[in-house]
Image 1 (cartoon, rainbow, N blue to C red):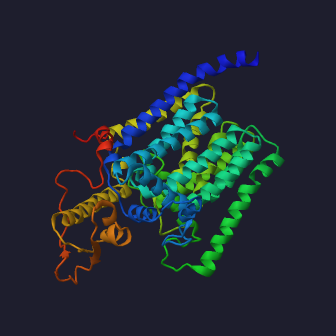
Image 2: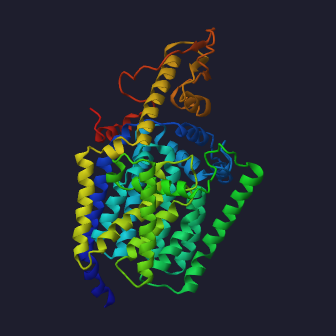
Image 3: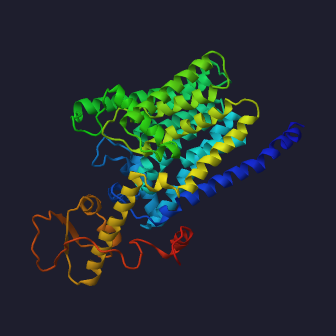
Length: 496
């Protein structure tokens, strides 16, 4: 009898949910489809090189994924920096379009998780869709879409967002086991997952539906212990094995003003209207102060019993907490670090609509989403297109493709070439010396060395010395492209 009465309750929500998911998928694809025509860039090459060294002959060989790379424990991200690229190679060879298609799908999954989380917290499909579109439109995600190596952030976000959804979805023992497992997976994805227990505690404390404190503590015990052990190992590594130096980009700085400035930077990266403004240092510090004030005010209002401020308090707190691993890094700002924090910004945006009260907040949320999309359309996506990180990634990828194409053609056109020497230009080291790209895109790869342009080597039998800049690729066919994935490039707008 219970099942008969439950069915009609679920059916009305099915169509709006399916429509919301469809709209979100279309928005993601239209906004970023040109990523399918982008080549590999910088860290992608050494990640592919590490993945190419893995050979599975027996179950124990899976340990190869977890070996230290040249970065040591500093950037120990075996699942996202090695395992991910191994899977991509097994699925797609070295077709960059196929790599980017799966990479874009991961960002779509993150958007769907934001939709599911927001719908849980707002009890509204419109609220969930609004949060998901805000998340998808955040210009800070752009470089993560175009740069495959940033899966270290987007992949970690996928794990942490799944943890948050699981936390909201059930309160049974499944949650405890699932969150503990996902915490381990998250830390093997990247250090950004250390914030997960704090995020879950924040949600548990601020939600209107209170849980027994004992259950919250029990379900978070294992994730908290795992994070504590991980941080202890990091502290030992940085103090005894690889001490920080002043010029280290990863050295944390206890500089409150700098923290506020970077908080302002990440806030601006969370809204296209702000990203379009030429914000200077003072403006960014002011924005960071404003965000801090709003979060504190929202927490105070919730403490005083106001439900209207609850979602702002949750979203604002999640935003700041998610950024704790990167706020101290004065020399290492990248806008794509909002991968997890973007959820908080999206929830806070929807929460600001709830201040209207009643049923009217949904209309306000739709209006804000429409305005965000309208700004993107009216500016031709300038918040993404002119993002310095996106410009850098696209330019580096194009330059890398030219060099790979040129080296491949030398090997194919000239018999007996055993060695190709190319000038150092800031990119060739990443592509060849560290990345070994010649092994991926050349049938009979020659030995490639990078030389200083101030000390050019001499020609010799079996050696080709390349000089100058690589010319554009004449047929617009990037190295590694395979015919079976050509339909992806047609979808992306490439002429047939």
